[in-house]
Image (cartoon, rainbow, N blue to C red; front, side):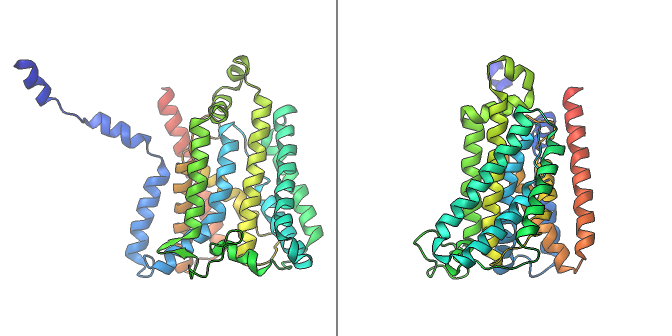
Length: 341
């Protein structure tokens, strides 16, 4: 009898357990919730369907690129070439589709192969040559940017009409005449794209041998090597994936803007790193997940929408994003230090 009474009087939750649970939630979720509340309270138009649809569409490219950036961060790396890869992709797609509109599928494949090559070069330099990922990807990104400016000095070219429909929901032979505005009911197709990519990406990282190896290499590369993992191959694969996702982001961006731009990808390098760090991914490797990154992507999207509503200069927006990155790094450092103490 006394044991049953004791069982009934035990509290299933304690202050410590709740605090521990809240501590596991990344800062991006809190920031997203706060910004949503502030935006909804300060702007009547914010919660309207068209605005939310545009917010998701504008966040799609960053959401795609962030998947690859987080993958490199999980192996204690970084990829500073993603912005240049995005720009190069839009330029090649626009110039080639303008000249050869009938070869759109082949042009898309060409862009993906170029991304694979760039990722292989980055992965070989970082994985096999053991060069500093910050310096090496900065150098490769600079070279890619130079090539892009050589191909197209200013915005130009044009993608095909069918390719433009990609950002509105058309895939392959299917049109989107039944989904005006690029939505399936109230849901933008861009949101479906992102959701599928993040579900598949999370499954790969959490449920496959490759994903577990990525975390192992980032957590302790020496131990991973001693356990038999080919750490060089894993880093090579991760950087290839990063470039492939940058190409996918560039293709989607080219579909949205309808042309090529040699500088359009520049902001996505810093933004993808910010999204990764704000989402809880450690720059030291081995810690992080994609869903936190997606929350951070949406946070940055909401922030940009709020700033645009208030006519804040783009220059000040860069300053704000830089401050957010510094704050996210500080929070990540404090969380890591608390766990090690």
